[in-house]
Every structure is written in structure tokens, then in C-alpha cells.
Length: 173
Image (cartoon, rainbow, N blue to C red; front, top):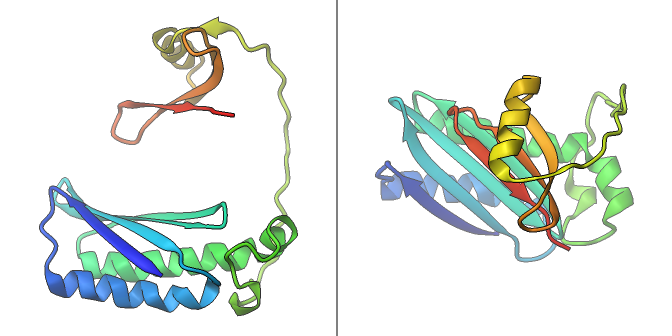
């Protein structure tokens, strides 16, 4: 596994980078080909934040952790990623047979949690611009809103971020 570490508002020591690489190499046993993991280190309000994304054969594993001590965050994020792989192993095997993941190396998850869809909604996609979609989302008091972007003629999602700003997801075909 190739580990790419970037930092923002944070000065990562070589010891920390080596620690992160050694911890992520333990996850390497789950993957059958050269997988790249992207690690982002940052500092937020005096706390250390680490974000990890692993793209394995079209399946994306992502975890985020904020703590006072960055080494503690690294341990927690490794546990989160391993837990994700275990929890969704059966579903991933059905969807992606042999595409970059060694499923036999992933431990079985103790609790079989079925994903239950408890409500389905249908709604008409109304063409609007991004600003109008944000206003609509706020009026509905939701944290996200799906709309047809009149500028790109594609389905987009606006969402409220934890920092109070907004994000935009654009779809492509």
C-alpha cells in the first residue's frame, strides 16, 4: 500500500509520518494490489485531525478522527477502517468479486447489521442554481438537498458542512 501524507496548518514530524505508514501497512493484508491511501493531517481549534481515504477497486473506505493527541487519532482511525471492512465484508464480496480487496483476510464482523431502509421518498427534481438550492435546503431545515443544476443540467447535492459552510456534490456520467 502506498501511503500519501499531506498536512494543512500542521507540521508533521518524520516520526509521525513513519508511525502512520507503519500503521497503514498493517491494513495492506486486506488488499490484493497496489492501493493508494491518502492521509490528511490538520489542526482544528487546537485539536489534531486526521482524515484517511483508501480507494480499493472502486470501493472507498474513509474515516476521520479528531483528538488532542495525533498518535491517538492514528490508532483510532486504523480501528475504524478495519471495522468498516469487517462490517461490510459480505456486501462488498457480492458487489466486487476480486477487485483489489482480499476478502478472506478481512475478519468476520461479530454483529450482522442489516441495512434497513425505513422510509422512501420520491420528489420531482426542479431545475435551480446552487444558491437557490441552499436556500431551499435551509427552508426545509435539512442538512442536504438534491436538485437539478440548471447551469450544468446534472443532478447535484448541496450539504451543510460541520464547519458551517456548504459543500456541493456534482454528478458525472
